[in-house]
Length: 341
Image (cartoon, rainbow, N blue to C red; front, side):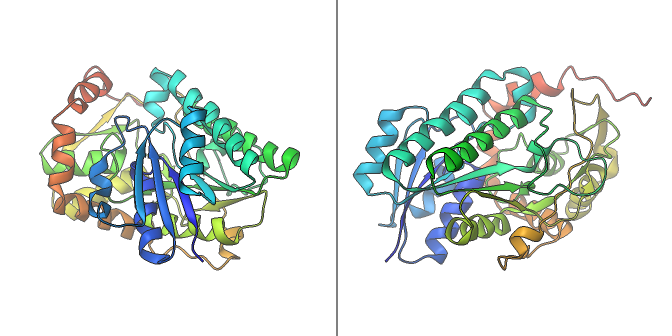
């Protein structure tokens, strides 16, 4: 007997990839997507599923308790998988209010709905809740030390999820993923931004010296891990998800240019953003003990992601020609060049 999943934020980047994964790998499951369709939500991400009888879309806000309740009851939902979030660090620095509302208050609304119905709840979180990791690797029991409004809002959501497990006995799980890349990623994020800029002959704005370290993972690998934890993870537990290998942003940038056959002269080092975490690194032993392994190295994930943007200009060109232009100019137009020391 299959499950009916409510996938919140399912028209966004990771959420839409997860919807495709579930419908492709779980033939008896049904998926209801609830998405507010903010700037990063895009129904083009799901358009190949519109004729699938196991898929249903509802436009709505996870902060709206009445809408959440109506969707859960109308569709007989068994479990909530929460991808809905404001996610871009730069935007959180400029306007933290939306992040607190969606990532904290929205999470609370969903948890309350799950508690009232006794259903399973999974929270999709981020390794950024651990903050800067100068050495070693973060494990799930490490203290949360977020350093940006985005990371703080996600940490707040994680703590609420844990509280609902401890206080109410709600069947909860959390995954904390490293930097995802792949299809349908909104081009404010570094890899699609750099790939599409390079394709257009535009500069690639590298923050600071570009030696920040990140674990770039293929979004499809992450989706497999999320689904595994939803179905087999221990209640009340969090699981780190990533390749376990970090590379510098300059290495990523150079690999993007190499994959496209573009010149390094497109790189422009710009002033770093405030509070930029220097290094993330997570220990993935806990989820590997469930039988999961990343299928891609960071380098393979970067190359495959770049090739997707090469092959899918239909998807990203309309985005970059619209309101994104004003955002890009505001974000990078007045940002000075990086000055070492």
